[in-house]
Amino acid sequence: MSSLRQTLTDYLKVRRALGYKLERAGKLLPQFLDYLENAGAETVTIKHAVAWATLPAAGNGHWWAFRLNVVRGFATYLQTVDPAAEVPPKDLLVDRPHRATPYLYSDQEIAALIAAADTLRFPLRRVTYRTLIGLLAVTGLRVGEAIRLDRGDIDFEHGLLTVLDSKFGKSREIPLHPSTIEALRAYLRERDRLCPPSSSPAVFISPAGTRLIYCNVHSTFRQLRRHAGLKPRSGSCRPRIHDLRHTFAVKTLLDAYHDDGDVQPRLSLLSTYLGHVNPSSTYWYLSAAPELLALAGRRLERHLGGQS
Image (cartoon, rainbow, N blue to C red; front, side, top):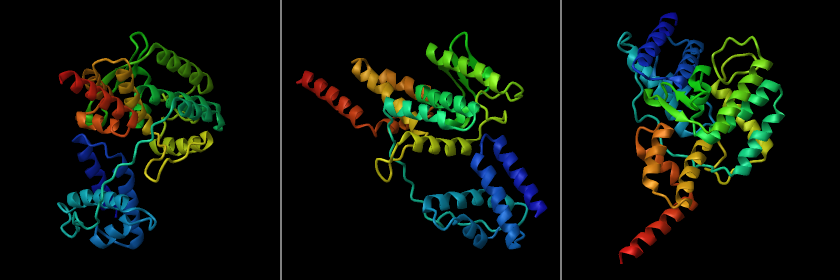
């Protein structure tokens, strides 16, 4: 088993050197090796891969297929040094891809989420989550981008935020409103007062002085969501932290329509601002907003009416 763990270390190192972040795989694969060890298995087998991937029994097919796909990648690499390793076929667990319906927050709901941070246990957690949620709401940052921010990524003089090595290895600069810059400045002052000895370069830290962890942020957000009284609008439309990004995108385009300006250039800028490699990703963000589609439809009717 020690050789298997060393192979896993090598696999993750090689893949990350190629630009893959493997944040989930880096957590799931050690769990899979724990499972193999408890089962007395010396290498990866299809039987054990499927048995582990379909945990928990109450999970859904999409999650099971994702877990098996993570194992498949490692098993393919492992087979080059261990011919006895078995690679699970691609179609063994059917993955029916689906996207959740974005939950578009009102200004009042965002304010309620920020206010709910005051229910958290430690003063540093309270001020950290107030600022984090506010920053996500006004910038459309991905959660991972926000928690990876270091203090040096904020240019207070020029009002810029630098997002380094984000999705697909891309980096970008984000201009911030002066009020956002001031909010970040105030947060860092309060953060340093509450946790002076922190050696972490991270902007957002835990009461222990360490960088926030992705899964803990999601867990805390669910807690804040309950305190804010936010309820699902349907089985596929639940208030998620990522929907702050959807909301930012929709509101940006709504402002453009209400200003009666040229929307297409604004859409191109929005795609760049959000860090989308393909503009189609931005279009999908916007397709879930009935108000936005109605405004676009009315503008198209005016355009066609002017041609007749």
